[in-house]
Length: 424
Ligand SMILES: [Zn+2]
Picture 1 (cartoon, rainbow, N blue to C red):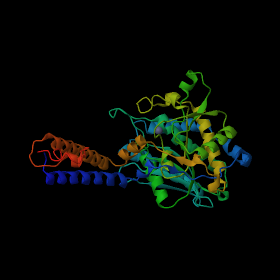
Picture 2 (tube, rainbow, N blue to C red):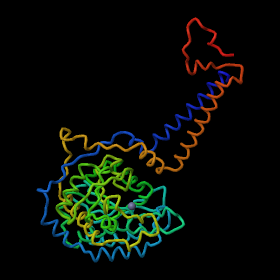
Picture 3 (tube, rainbow, N blue to C red):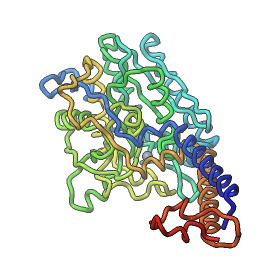
């Protein structure tokens, strides 16, 4: 039997290791997703409240030709990839930043663009802002980075996600061209071009974490990630449609997006599920903000070439991207002039509660800090191996001095039978 003193020392070390492990888990900025998250709910406009004449006139400026040409240009410039922690990733964000700086010259009082730098990797996120009367934020997002699961090959990432970048740029162009009076806007609208989405949305998690920390009010966020692939939809005999992600979106905002789709686009949406954390709308959800995600089709029909060197412009249907541009333009047009109000507690139901799975937590945790994750794995491995050795020692009977297994794992012993109390 193991000596008592040795036992308590080893037991203490194991407890210490587990305490450090727990502290590491808690220190992560995603620890709270283990609990149910309360998503803020708002009085999103009903169809009857829509400003149909204004929004229709803005939508009419959307140009299929421009969307196609822009995508062609972007896919040529960034054909060899935009990996988040690479020079190419850095340059792709910088290119967008410089482009948008020129766009912002159209109204230097209302329009601005900033680089959002991330401390752990090279590629920054880019934020284009149209300042309204208040600092309440309406956000549309997309990601700039790309990835190939075979790191030896290029990651053109045209559908995933130059197609989303293109939709946001088209919306900005349309708003500026159609002479929208930004001084009438109640809310500030931001266009986010995130870094590092392919690493479980690291870039947008940074951005929304900072917004939460600074007490910013985000009234709505809509994500555009993969907007141009329809081939499988048609092959499967389905009509052209949007995929509306229903499992990783806030339900109330999703209902508003449904209303926008039915009012302002020419196609319908079909509900679809990611079944695990997917794309950047998870980031507002993590911090209690409303987020929704619409992609090119139901997940089953989406682009099978993503994350390979075949995610090329040849597979893109620009007509379908026009529908996404309509959706985003209408979303921005309607929410820019809306006055957001929190709904009363009494009006809130369980629909604004969101729960991530334990698997999601581990993915989010593991991607948030490699060093912390490696330490956690080492600590757990050491704790398990020490526990196994300790339990083995207790029951092996190799040593003569004693920790009674009954003291560690009490056995049922008759009060009169003391013979089993010490095992020598
Ligand atoms: Zn993507």
